[in-house]
Image (tube, rainbow, N blue to C red):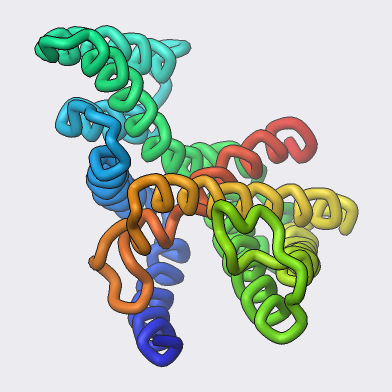
Length: 276
């Protein structure tokens, strides 16, 4: 299994790095595709967990929110307007259920699934929020969009890698084992340290003081871990080991982006509050 995961990563990681380097429309395209695939898997898991929904409507809503993040701002609060329209349409779609006790969870699940998958749109918003590095910064050539998205991607990967290897070799005591039995305190610490080191190095390369990385690293690590646990809770409720089988050795798209779903909004908020 580890060999299969390594081969899949070797195939997937280089194109993703190329996309980040190209930036702009390429990043938007990848986020849009990933959102649609993640939403499909999400509604499949919800159905398996016993929560009915209107998947087509939820997927369209998630896609609309992500595209709105990429489009020029023409109307203030347009994202919230899209959510409001989604709430209304999901309620109308749930009217078809003959038993209101089925209609109500259908309504809730459709909105929840759409909003959950659409959190990937914050990858795009992070690129828009990231300030341009000073010309003298070592990584100034990346620019604000690519630089800060790279902080997010490499920070999440560093957390996953640190947590996996430290937890595997030193992990004894587990936490939240009712959700994910493989999570250990040692892995948590290892991932947090690895994430903070990587985030600090990249943010310094973007011309920020070391304190920015030291503050952001633990926040990003905690958000990445929470995102992973949230999807694990969903899979456990659905009785599924993976969200899908699209990526050999890695499961589905949702299994690959679960950490980003929580980490991207947290990093975006941090940039808006503490960096800009």
